[in-house]
Amino acid sequence: MTRLLLGAAADVLRREIATASVDMVYSDPPFGNEQIWTGKAGSFDDRWEWSAASSTGWAALKDHSAAGAALLAAVARSAPSRAYLGVMAGIIVELRRVLKLTGTLWLHFDDTMGAELRVLCDVIFGAGNAIGTLVWVRTLGGHGNSKRFGRVHDTIACYGRSRAAKWRLWRIGTLGGDPITGDGFGRFDDFAIAAPLGPTDKERVGYPTQKPVALLEELIRAATLPGNVLLDPTCGSGTALVAATRLQRKSIGIDISQDALTAAQARLTGPATAQPSFDFGEVA
Image (cartoon, rainbow, N blue to C red; front, top):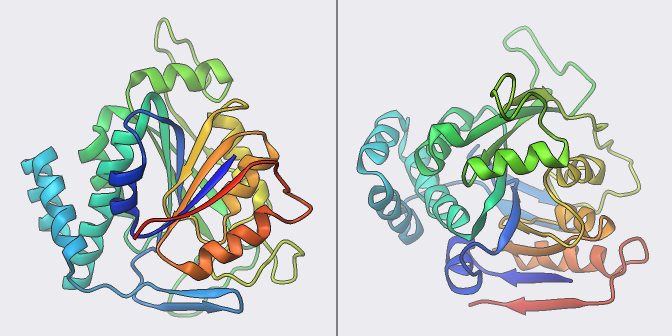
C-alpha cells in the first residue's frame, strides 16, 4: 500500500506519521541552489527566504541541541541558506522521530549545501549514528570548463536512528565487518551501482531532477525487507515509491507540490507498478 500526502513535509510528518513507525526514509529534497526547476510534468522553486517554517525548524533544532543550532547558524553562509536550513531542520527532526530504532535515513544532496546538511544530521542523529556515504554518478559526461570542474555526482548520506540500525544493516547484508569485535563494522563508503538516467530514457516523466528507479531499488534492498515501510518526505514524481512497490514494500510519499503528487499517482497506478491498495490523501 502507498499513501500520498499533500503538504509541507514537517507539518505532515507531525500530524500524520506516528512515532517509530517507519523502517527507512529516503529524501531527495531541494538542494538550496536558488533556482526554479521546470519540466513538462511539473516544477518546483528552490529559492529560499525566511518563513514560518524556517523559524519553526530553527526552534525545533534549538530544542534538540542548542549548541548544535549555534554551530549550524555560524556556518550558514547567507540569508537564503539560513532559511533553507531552518526548513530542513524541521523536517529532519521529525524524520528522526518517525524512524524505528532500527531505521535509517538516506539523505540525497549535492555540494551546494552538502556540508551544512551533514552537520545538521550529525547534530540531530548524533555523529556516532552516521553510518556512511554513497556516491551516485549521475552523468557520464565531464561537463567541465576552464573555470570549474564538472558536477557529475551526488552524495547520499546514511544515518541510523540508533546503533540497532547498524546491526540491522549488517543482518540484511549491507555492512561488512565483525559486529562482535567492531573490526570494519558499522560503516560503508562506496559507489552506488546504478546507471545515470538518460535524457531519453523511457522512465522519464518530465519532472525535474527525477532519479532512476534502479538507484532507489538498490538503496531499498540495502535497508529494508519485504513488507517494511519506506517514507519519502519530498517525493517529487515518486521514484522511491515506485521502487518500493516493485520490491513489495509499503510506502508513504509527501510533497508540497500537487504537480508532484499527480505525477507520482500516475506512475503508481500505471501498468509497470500497479498495486492493489492505494490511498491518495491530502493534508492542509
